[in-house]
Length: 441
Image (cartoon, rainbow, N blue to C red; front, side):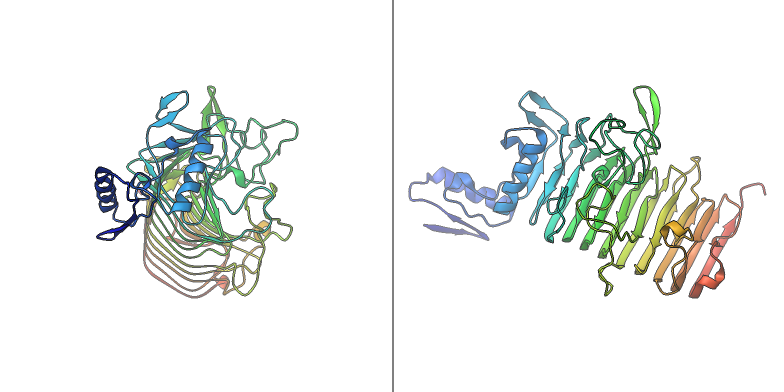
């Protein structure tokens, strides 16, 4: 028979006990969503937890995600891990958590950490990875921290840094010198990596001691990223020795990202806290370990790979590695346009000041040099306070834009630095700029 209770509909057998029916109705009412089941005990109103599965922590979490996506239920990773060897307040990953279309993943006051055996992401969209050359789009992915949700790097990372960094020479990695293991960093060092995902959200997460970029999105769209806190310094104390860990960006948007809201980024990073980087690599192959992008870093044309329609609000943080808080970088015909950045407070205090609060473009030939006028355009930047060496550093081109309400303090020089020359500026309005030299001068 079919019983209708508010918005909750259940399919029950004639033999279902009355007490079970009442319990199912109550659970559906509390969850506020419909449920369909063969009997009351299998109500889909209940969330899925990895504690209901067997295997390693990674296997149990991925089994829960598969079950949740198949049934339309959210997946909850709780604080306590009821592992086979006894309960503990940590989840140790030997491989990445893989999210798929329809995933709602809630991290409830939990700590998720990469094991020393892992050379993989913490979380990755399941449509991409090693050997996947054609990345099929997925949609409707939500990853949310409830309470305090911490995602943490390994105690002894096998690899760190991007694809240009050699392990053991420029950046730390226990795989340095190990036969048959890649001797450079790559996309597997990224904490949260998503490619070709639409209708997504990342909320209320803390990322600690990332192996490279904490979060990187490639060709993702129609999403929101909010309340993300970073804690990385560019160095780690490992076995009593200070080790260098390079490329610890906070959040990176890469090729083709568009229609995304970013708000409330906090903390500190070893490299740029937020970077919008659109760089071409004609030899790039999706799914290889030769790149820091899991998809191909190519230009599909017709503006498909432009970074565009991005809203950024309320950044309160700094770069502990002395680089930039926000960086916009595009090259080789790939564009960045229609971006709003409203509100940046440099929280470095007595820490080493960064090179720039905001850096736009780059004259370095490695990145393609100064972009043609019009390739970086319609950028609105307002309400910026920083003690960095440069507050707004224009090192490439900028056109049809507005920069306003900028305060530079505790540092010499003007609030705007035209490193690439004013000939690379066109139709840009600068308003309400204040420079405040160090106290006593």
